[in-house]
Image 1 (cartoon, rainbow, N blue to C red):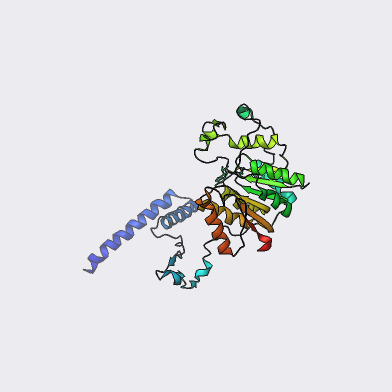
Image 2 (image 1 turned 120 degrees about the horizontal axis):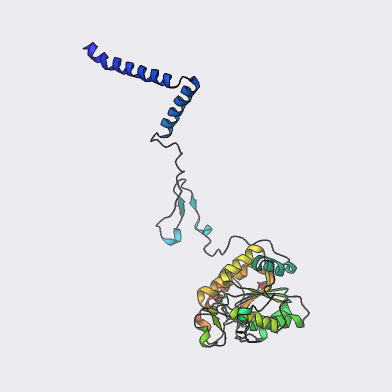
Length: 327
Ligand SMILES: C[S@@+](CC[C@H](N)C(=O)[O-])C[C@H]1O[C@@H](n2cnc3c(N)ncnc32)[C@H](O)[C@@H]1O
């Protein structure tokens, strides 16, 4: 019995010896033999099914408890430390604006950051649109109201930010008023220069190329016509992204006019974002507080904003006004 049990192990031993001898003959050079052994060890190690990469750390999902809303707490599953509800900060628009830029650096900052360091008026108009523009085509809504003169006289702004410009009626009016006062004012015009779907029903003379309306080009042409290129600069992006970038770059306005989207959500977002980049002591104001379309959203957004922030709201003609100096 013992002999039977020992036989396979004897055979195995003899077989291994034969392999070693053959290998030794094959690799008369000892160094090559050692390298081969090391290589086979390494291959065996690497092809082992066990992973040697440490597992990723467990994620720490945040769950909202299903208690009644007045007592909602946030809990991190791993540490069970409750986060007070008042830290949720629902109305946070952006984390932090950059340090305020001096007003004399605003124009160059915008030109550098948005226009590759070249004035957008250089070589205007480009040949492919020159035949499609009118020498001057201006139209606005409440764009010449007394509120503009009253606020410019009072604030004497060095930086004006207009949110919603269209063909530039109100921006050019403000450029004229600041010029009359001898102010060196920079007026930034935030507009995506798309108007709104169907606006060409009433503005057929604003041409279109491949579905692209030429509102931006006609606005530029108007600024050139009124000799205001040194005072007026377009910021041709959607109001949300443009206001966020101005905040990040530290651009602040002494006077900010809101006149872009008139639905509640648009007006609400624009007012909140613009408030963040209003210089302390500055004034924010906007159109369509009292017009035929007045309660489409603007008035509700302004009222809510003033109420939540405990701000005093004034009206001037069709415009609403919030003066941070009295708040
Ligand atoms: C009523 S017009 C501005 C009129 C101008 N303030 C005036 O009185 O001459 C509104 C403008 O807001 C722009 N607008 C609307 N929503 C916008 C958005 N989300 N971002 C950028 N511009 C927007 C439109 O393109 C349009 O030119």
